[in-house]
Length: 422
Image 1: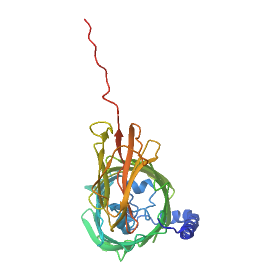
Image 2: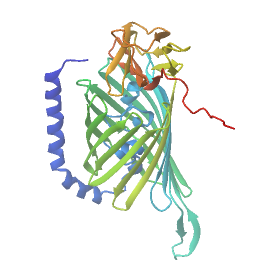
Image 3: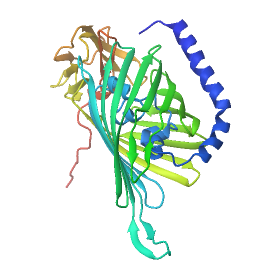
């Protein structure tokens, strides 16, 4: 852990002062936004996914998943495993946005990602100059983001997107290319700040005769963890040429390892959502956000595999120190971004007290044996115990295995023996 108390308070004070100051001018910028609606690329700038919408769109310092590159491509460097993300957002009048994203973290080389977003409207009536019906048409927008990110230390990373955007309205269409830049910096392990510049040098689209350019956008904010990473608060300020400044804020709290709740505020409107881990590798996300046209709903599903991880599994998961299965074997695996520095396997009881701990330097062994005794060699009572493996690399990253359970039982089979009488 870093010991940067002074940097923590100084950095937090700077960010908080900036957020409060620009929040005061926020109401004035809302009017400007209403007067400049429909700017090029507005759909992409306003896009929010399921996890993002749940925290009110304050994601520039939280971004650590494949689709987070829309806010900050530097977040790819803080992913641990390969991840596929699928998402759909239902808006108004049969309009929807669908997304696909894949991120692949790397150890020495840059991390890479690719994302595809598609907005498709409902049907519109085509009319002649005399208001005669001429059939239907729709609008379709697509964005392809090719992302790369490199961490220069555990605390600092930069990233970039090459953005290709295509728009089609009726029989007219156009394609443009732009660039995004982003950075993430950890002031302390619990506090990080993020910033990004979007739409540098484009994209520029020409549907008929007039060229339209996506306005340059700046996003900056912070994310602060508490309760050992279970809770998080974040705030973000966005500035876009035309609409001006908007404020976003939100919070996330993991009620337990498998479920998180989120609440947020996105430029005058509330939002909220949750995540549920179906398995350690698969997660489902949902969010609902309010705006001037009503409530919108967003759904997402992610799947993680490979990459960098830590895992542990007890075989058998139920054993008896006085029976035939007198010990259990913990199978350990780990792959870290930098060389492994240390590892520990903790076993805790129902009161969340550590009753036995294994550990050492370097890479964890293939397995360790446990005979159901505590650190002093005394036999532990029957019951269910939780365990997980933590591996720390030389750049102080922690890779935490999914928590599992193991059970000690010294009682024989339960049940009743029938007695027959004549």
